Length: 387
Image (cartoon, rainbow, N blue to C red; front, top):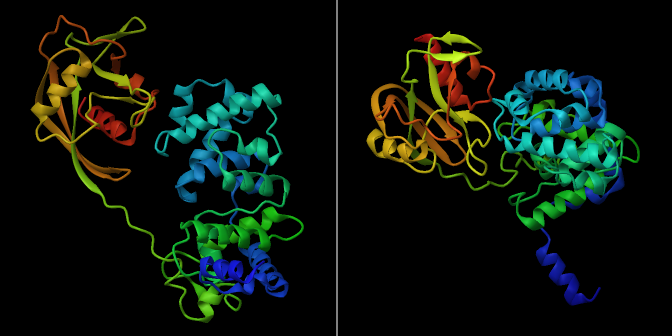
């Protein structure tokens, strides 16, 4: 390397402590971390039985979701779909019902697509080749490495929220981890830190440290097994690292949902008359909560009044809607939006004209079997309380 190239590389190198390049330091950190993990690892179902399939499901569920939230979903999911083949064979509606409440439903659809591909190309056996795993829908570099290292001990580095923070503090990395040079450096650290054998245990230990000790705010450095080697702690900057990430600027939005009861006195189900049926539909592909069922609801923009919203919903239903009284207001957040959802009663002005497909009148009992969004399910609960 020429003198000019060396100067250029030095300028581009992120500001950090290069102690991680010392073999003795790495060995010291590994020993301390693994000894701590052996005593403090949480008892999690995918750790008790860490097959590639079970680890895969856990890793997808844990994306942007806390362990405590995932646990009951994971147990129910594995009971219904214990193998890749059974997951591939199920219909999307049943799958989404099992995913209801976890959010980020694209994850469930990617699981479904990947399971079908595994059945078609690998006879239902989860592949153990990194490139083959990486090619599956919904799987990136981190997830592929996590699955293969945890389930089969492959020497694959991982970098996700917890390990990104842990490694940044270990090497006192200044700057935001998501910036390309910093991300590249952290992947190098992640790979260098791996032991020669059983990389999965090390990866889980590093993630566990980030989840339980090396937390984003007020890390418990006094309880950390690696504090003596952590460069951020040694220099007193642990709460300044990782560098600040640009905060999401939330946009307020007002949306409306309209509850429409079937005009006739009751609706028929399997030869019986039920009390009431309500107008719902499966949401179209490409939009929010695609594939889930919902009441007539605005999701594309904010509306100033229920009458303005009803005009838009009338076009979607194919029959003019007359909005009625407000039943409730639900506050929730979706991506960058803070939403105030106003739920109103409503009726169709032309009762002789039927709503077009895919709209259907469904009883509350039937809705219990349909996948719905969290707010849609809250509307159902409200109707059940007042039925």
